[in-house]
Image (tube, rainbow, N blue to C red):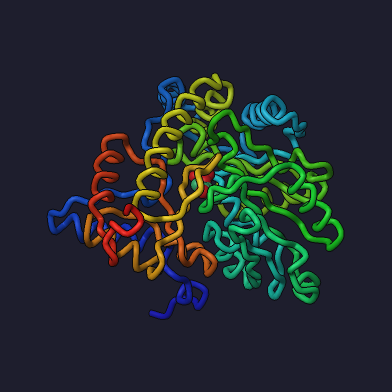
Length: 395
Ligand SMILES: *Cc1c(COP(=O)(O)O)cnc(C)c1O
């Protein structure tokens, strides 16, 4: 059988390859500790589960939901944005619940790009931005994010002929995989760039609630004029430990929201209603829950950073996100170090080049690992000798 070229040419999703390697090792009876995927290890708060269980028993929730989501959920999302960011949204036209934000992110290219158009995609980045662009027969143009510019893109460095063909700019702060953050002034620069060049912005912001030491990351929509040029994707996955329930949202520009709604209504039949009711409960809940989870992540972050520094890796302590982005020691590649750590000490880290060419020379460690595994994983890492031994920097 011959499948379509667009699937034939698709690289396997990053974590599929890594999961396979882990499974092989475990099948051989070896212990593997994974700092790989960013998937909260702590359970969904029980008040949310209780709402979900109750809603699951209600026959009204057994039927097809509406594609555009319950009005009560759209209102809860608008209220949450107002309280958290002081951003005003019209729940009728500027809010769209999604089956996890990945669903909307993946479909957005189809809504905004014609074949041959260019999407400006950060490198390194969450792989979906570039892949969905290619699936829509459009072309990703990679804008490098480097340590020297704080992993923020330099719009002035994009060639004029690329800008002419560009229709869409992807941004993501707090950033996966680098842990970098952006302020409102940066978002305003992006809005000015988009406006001047007739480009729309999709900001992916699932980590605005996952921040440390009192830092509160802004929403892209707080930038003056943002709603005229773009939308923001948000998610309950990371803030409320709800990755498994698949619930997120797109908010902002009404034309873009409407395009996504029209696309969606032809592709899926909306978020299961019981999940929507659970999401309302989540959004209306106390902040203290999120702070408690962040305290745990912060402690893990500090332990991981300390161990990596001891190993001779160069690393900044991230102010937000669930990731530590570490530079591999001299003489290593991303894949080389990741392979060596897996083979020698049974620890999984994600090779940075999986997020793009600019990710080469880095590995990513996720904070979503249970405390017990974390302790085990760090002590395994501490036994790693590296190809030059480890005494050099400790003399
Ligand atoms: C986790 C993640 C998402 C996906 O979130 P879902 O709402 O669970 O689909 C989107 N973007 C980035 C950058 C992520 O890390």
